[in-house]
Structure formats: C-alpha cells, structure tokens
Image (cartoon, rainbow, N blue to C red):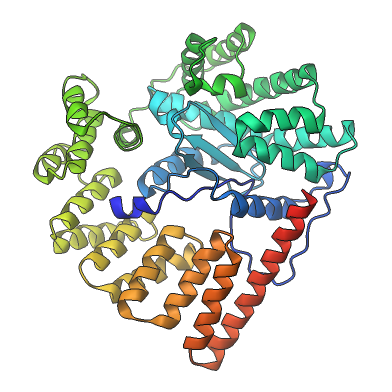
Length: 477
C-alpha cells in the first residue's frame, strides 16, 4: 500500500493508547508529590494521550498497515497469555534502524525497525516483545517513577518531563534524567538489573505459554552478547537493556527447565523482515539489492517477497508479480503488494474483486479495508470509498490513514461540509488545535441542518478544552 505508506511518517511519543478526547470535562491530573500509586489508570491515560499528541511530530512512526498488523498479531498472541494486563496495549514501529524496543506507561510498546532487521527468527523477535510486555505488566515504569518521587523533592510532573525528553531525544534525555532527578549511577544500575531479570523470567514463561520457542530469548541474548562493547550505535539495546554473564546464565537455566520447542515457521516473519529490509534500509540502488538477493540463499519466502518488493520499486510490475505468484495468494503481505501492482497498472477491477472477496472473511481487517478504500478512490469511485471507510471507522475512529483517505474521498465528491470536518479531526489528532478549530469553523459556515451545526459546535468546545488541558499540563512539566 505505497500511497498509504506515504502518510505513514507521522511521529508518536506516548505513554498510553491515543484517543481523541470525547468528554467536555477535562481536568489536569494532580501531579504533585504523591507517589504513582496515587496515579490512577484514568490519570495515566490522560498523560499518555497528552504525550502522544505533543510528541507525534518528534518520533518517526512507520504506519504501514501490513507491518502493524503483523506486529499486533505477535503482541496480541503474547497478551492473551499474560497476567496483569490492565491496559489496551498498543504496539508501534519507529523508523529507527537501531536494535531496540521500549515499553512505556499504559501499555505503549515501541519497536524499532532495527528489531526486524537483526532478528533471525520470529521467536527472537517475540522474545523482545515478551520482555517489554513484562515491564508493563509488572509496572516497572510506574515503580521507577514512584521511587524517584519518594527519593527526591521533585514533582511527578517534572520527573515525567525528564523521562519524556529521554524518549524523544535519548542523547539529551539521559543527561536530563541524571541531572534533574539526581539518580545515582548505582541506584539506576540496581533498579535496571532487578527489572531486567524479572522481565526476563516472566518473558520466558510468557513466550512458552504463547506457543513460541522460549530459547528465542537466549538466542537474542547471544546476538547481543556478541555485540557487547561494540561502539556501533545500531546496538542501543545494549545500553537500555544491559547484559551480564549472570543474567544470560539465569535465562538459559530457566529455558532449560521448559520442554523443548522448535522455532516458529510463520512465513509472515520472513515477509515482515523483507518488507523492512527493502523499504526502510538505505540501498545503493534497487538493481544492486536485487543482485544481492538473488545470491543470498535466504529462505524462499523472504527472497521471493523481497525481490517482488524491489522490482515493484523499479516499476517492473511483471517481474514483481512473477515472484509474488510463488507465494501464498491469501497472505496479507502478498495481497497488499498485488493491490499496489494492480492499481499501478490501472487494473482496478482485479484489485477490488480480490479485496472484496477477502473482506467477507476479514470484515474488520485494517489492511483489507484501507486497501479497498484506496482501490475505490483510484478507480474513480469515491462514494464507495466513503461507505467503506465509514464502516471501518465505526470501530476505528482515530485511524489517521483512514481519515486521510476519507478526506480525499470527500474532496473528490466536493462534499465541503464533510471535508472540513474530516480535516479538523486530522489536525486534532496531531495536536494542531488552532487549525483543527479553524477547519471546524469552516464546516459551520458550510454545513446545513441544526443537528449537524450543534454537533460541530460541541466538537469545537471539546477540542478547545483539549487544548487547554495540554497547555496546562505543559506548564506543569
């Protein structure tokens, strides 16, 4: 979905699942000296929503529906077997080639594209997610915040602000945490060691219960250990998740206590890895990449899909299709690229027929829904695109790509009333409240009907309150 991928460079920093506030009565959380045990789940959600909005333009997010679908599938498989899941987790991909992943308050888990690049198996990939999920379910971040409030005279707001800086700009943020919070080296090391060991133990058990090979975690440790002391900035995970021989031995011992299990053979991991390798890494040229791929000896799934992607980038759609024909035709990765090829060749009916057939068995799937809406637009059928997107957005009201497609559809229909409203919602999701309110006021000038007018006025009030909330919280930080 190349055209959708263009909208994928939104940036996100958050501590919780981001939703557009729908309540009029927003109040700034009391972030005084109370420990985080007084930080209710509602307050965590408000803080997380705030950080997501304010930092969306500071961290490169890969909003690729197929990659996101795969990441969610692995993450949700783990969550089904995890304990103490108090939040609706959200996994997201940062366009960052360094090997790392991070967990935040409220179930936010960031995965760098580097994790796809450096993982050799799905079990290794899942092991990092299991580790991060365990940080959240054990409330390691909240416990850290609580400890800092108790050990210092700082407010929770200032501590969260320092942590926020560390996430947005790691180089500056590390110094900010040390200076602002007065964290001694030894206390930080002790806290990290305790949390890392606990996340390892729980993560290994979670891997096994979820059907993955728990040895994936120790395999990943071996990768990291071989990089220990490497000054290559690609291996930032060694800084955020320090290794030791004792930690590795303890993890190995725990794995050996579990029944042996073979590695996962899910082809989607190969497809996801190939997609990141081709589309996110820098290459001297696609021609050179193709030559390397043909001699790589990689798995047939990886090789065929990577070659299809590379030929698609070169607009050699015949060659791209020939490699896709060697792969399972009902796989979402394959369907997505076949759709791009059909639309590029103006073969709209083939794309729409394939997607509508898939929709019958996957009515809520994001990849199918957004591809179908995009196909309708490319085929000059914006009315059908609107209908498709409205159904999808009944369950996903804050989907940025869906809103972007819907805005395009309304524009082609010359439906100014709906166009202004949709653009207003897009700007609100990016915390650009001035433009959001301007767009909604334009809608008031365009739309007719008392109920519509009243609904828009109410939405303007909500967004104004959201802006006031963000501004007040920003001052407290």
